[in-house]
Length: 65
Image 1 (cartoon, rainbow, N blue to C red):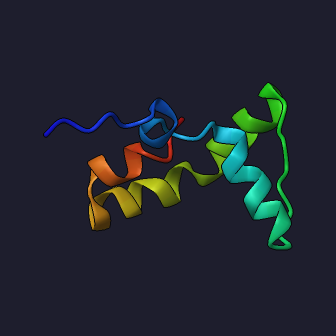
Image 2: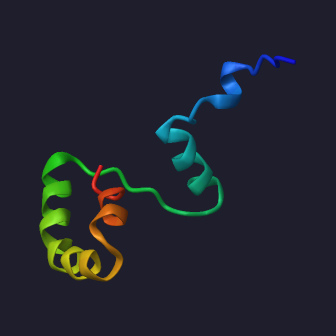
């Protein structure tokens, strides 16, 4: 027996769907411009390195994009 699965069932929701859900649950989502993002990344780099050692590079690589 072959079952046809709709493409919508298999697709990953767009990034902004997750953000909308966070906002709907009362979270504040802040969009950063490139300068702000660079400043933020430089600020948290030492913290990220300590967590990279603790949790592993593979897990933290998910946060980098």
